[in-house]
Amino acid sequence: MEQLTEKLQGILSKSKSIVFFGGAGVSTESGIPDFRSADGLYNQKYDVPPETMLSHEYFFSHTEEFYRFYRDKMLCLDKKPNAAHKKLAKWEAAGRLTAVVTQNIDGLHQAAGSKTVYELHGSVHRNYCRSCHKSYDAEYILNSDGVPRCSCGGLIKPDVVLYGEQLDDYTVTKALEAISACDTLIVAGTSLTVYPAAGFISYFGGQNLVLINRDPTPFDGRADLVIHGKVGEILGSMV
Image 1 (cartoon, rainbow, N blue to C red):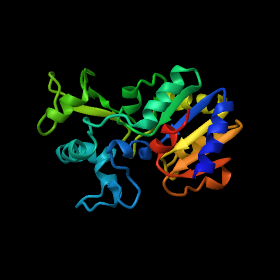
Image 2: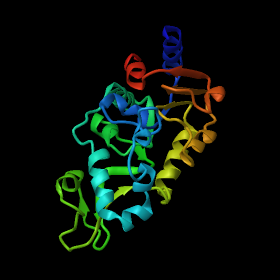
Image 3: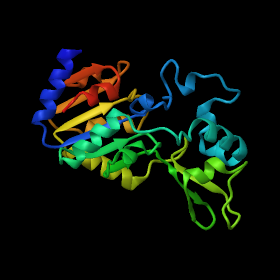
């Protein structure tokens, strides 16, 4: 491991523009469970599979049940940024990192101080009325009962991309522009099995592709450096 982290430090020291592309494994050290690992959310036992409960169709056909699960498992508002979030914000402030592209919806990158964050799957911190488009924060959703309603009576929906919904075009475009322009791409905490996000790596044409993940990914063979470990511990040890 020491050899690998030394190699990573060497890559980072020479990099002029770093982009970080992260998934659920980036936030596990903050106490937020991931989805697809052995102890992840999707391997827990529910009467209705989490993939179904987090779908567009289920939101509209079983709205109260959706919100019961969503409040319990997706609104982790007491969690704090870990060493990975903090180090990325520090690199951005120093002009070394140009963007964070994330599949997470927890807002921890912004909480750590990152400014340029492309949230592919939206954010729990943005919620809107489907009738009048008034905005509500995550605390409003967490503290509401049953189906959260707007002051106008309309249904409030989280600004997160549910199964069966498309990614936001603008966010995708900006993320791909950032990945295409950087010289070092760090991909971390993601199984790289969910498309279209996993396909974003194909847009990278820079010098160093670094993969950091607890488990092997289908892209390990294409990377210049692969480190199997905890994202926060590894990035936290970098300068």
